[in-house]
Image (tube, rainbow, N blue to C red; front, side, top):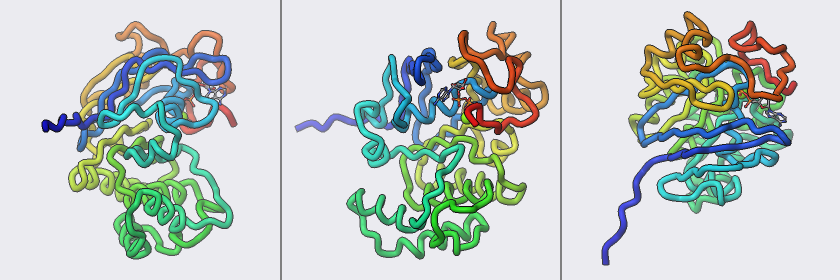
Length: 280
Ligand code: ADP
Ligand code: MG
């Protein structure tokens, strides 16, 4: 009997999606292979978080076209927990506070659901915490409750390190981190790409994350489409010049999709607070 060889790749093809009555993603094509790092950069409101939510299956985010496969598995046909089991991890831009539940129990439950032993989970998390210079007491505290933005981001990194998914979407994991924490987290993700063959889709506004976490490609997302693709130099150019030049060359503008108004005003692009959540 011949076994078919599964191609290892997270493949996003022509992905279209809407939130409520508004079409946000207008056809996204992206491929992430094991060990690769793909950065996604783009102005506020361009659809970056929407992409991450559609991939993970957040309720309210409706896919209207295209496909996503993870190592041959049709991801969009699965509920969120099965997408996680298939090997996808999402580090949220705004991690959720979960009163009464520790990070350790979340990781233990996910590990058990995956049919793996939970023995040694505590020690693993303590090791992961030390790898990113984080205090191990966060492992047993109620998850994310009363933590600073940077501490929440390191909690996401702890889960990523312990769960060892095949592919990780990092939605602004660098926001809120101080310089040292940023260096430690970028290094830890880079190590995961080398040690475990983790494939990474890193949404970010800053090239600093990408100094340690070396991107294979940088994709520029605006108005729900990938408007330009480049190498690491693209991230540096965007940071020094902003988005207008690159988008003009691509024949696009920083503006939002038609019909979408941004609470920060029509010109809200690479503004003063790149982490402002358009919905808050
Ligand atoms: P980014 O992460 O690139 O800043 P988002 O994906 O969060 O952008 O948002 C893209 C657009 O979709 C924005 O105009 C935003 O207001 C809109 N949007 C996102 N989520 C929702 C939602 N749950 N309800 C209504 N509009 C939304
Ligand atoms: Mg976002």
